[in-house]
Length: 595
Image (cartoon, rainbow, N blue to C red; front, side):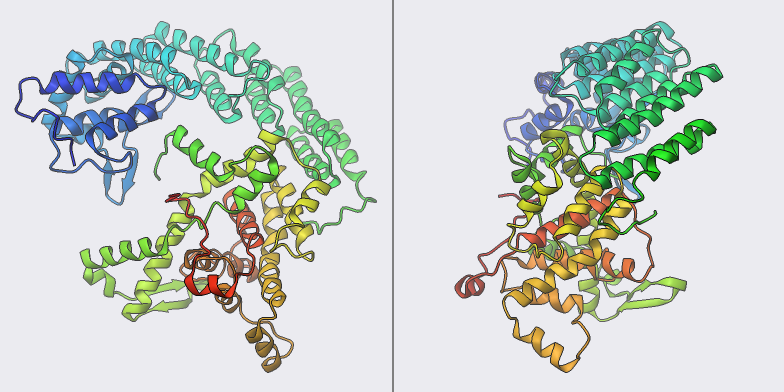
């Protein structure tokens, strides 16, 4: 509900009050904090739609900060942050009604803070009409001013990127150049030695933006070289070297950059702790050398790779739309790896689920959807497999409900993959890369990590951290069933032995094994459903079955991070006492509702 102390829409002071609220919210340290502050003032959550019956000024003010930015080579537009089918939140700028457009004009006349005025001027410029060029000039100036105020470099860089492109849109080359120069200043501050706020992705996106300028700044070359030295992760350094390569104008310079790219990976390989990590980095060097077309570089990279032929690698060789605020994304990422050591962070990563959320709440959502659209709830659902042949049907009301519940859980899990990937990458970035022995010794103490699967878990983590996501998936997917089976063998599960006696030489189905965990280990109903949705439910992600039958060739970072989390999630399971099993107090945490 809207705060009852707010003026009504008919009050003569309404607009002034809302403009003041906007300025007050702008006195925070980031765009996300600004949006959250406004929403809390009006009684809404940051992800809650503005109700249709809310005062128009409430919608106008919330939407000022809700729009995401879409930046092209010659313009920057404010676009809806969320897409729900054919509906967006907020509406497309040109689709808002006249009352909202009028409110934005009135708010612009009264607002004082650069963060508020930059967005309002940008909206009015995007609406078009008389005075558009003037609004663009104001937007450029106030975006630059707000960038100087934000404590988060990410927001400062984003505002400067927008300022430069809005300036380009109205042929204000001087304004665009000034904004890009300030952008490079911010990048330089991030690249300073031992800067705790250094984030490779933010730096690279900013440098891509500056490189895409029609006439790049004369300072860009020096900043790119600074970034190539400061960014220590091989893939990030290579992205910077690619930007430098794109600026080369002669063959000699290009050949030198190709050599630098190859040498960077070879140097990182020499510094790597394990042989598997060295060979993976050297493989990347060979791939780059192939693309270079330089025979000498290709032969050198290949010869270095071949030195591993006679070494024992102890592995099987495997070849291979919501827009979140950055700050919220980072909060989720950090919650997934809470802890002051890599061991605590990895344990937090294992326990950060179930990623499908709370089952009771999910059932309520499906019930609500079925009540709102009872006819569609009756339509049968069919899942098609290879050759477009159906291999799963949901026809009865109960089957259809379970199908829709599983699809919802799969969507929730998919929405968590971005922070999950970032969290797993952040562990070595934050704490350094643990050695193979350190990881093996630590994971061996986990109750659910059996010694037969321990090498695969360690190897999958190493493969992920050096960028070999297909290898991580191929290494670990078969071993998750091993982990679950060994848990049940550990407690002498009678039904498992019975199944073996009735069907000698065959293993019980994975779904049977997962169901058997309930009540016997410290896993909630939501946790059991998480395992089934990820591994073996046809309407879900069904990764284990699709992988085992060659239906999908997995290789993406999201699947790799999810499979590693799933294995580690099983690894923290331990048997429960009979009393605990009866009252179901052994619950796994819910990341969507930490309380």
